[in-house]
Length: 91
Image (tube, rainbow, N blue to C red; front, side, top):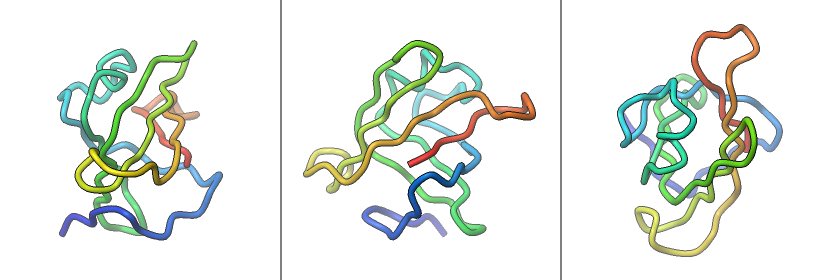
C-alpha cells in the first residue's frame, strides 16, 4: 500500500529512499529533477510529490499536496545514507 500526502511525519528523522519517478535513486541530480520519490515510513511506502533542486551535496525537495500541484506541505533534504548504501530523506 502506498500512502499519499499529507501524512504525519516527524521532523528530523531520516527515512530510506525506496524509489523515484526519475528511476535512478542513487543519483542526486536525477532526484532534483523528479516529480516524486518514495521513502519507507513506518514500514510502508510513502510517496512525496512536488519538486526538488540540487543544493551542494544534497537535494531540497518541496513536498506539495494534490499530486505535487497544490500547497506546500514540508521540505525534505535528500543526501547519501551514512552507511553509504543509497539515499536518505529527512523532513
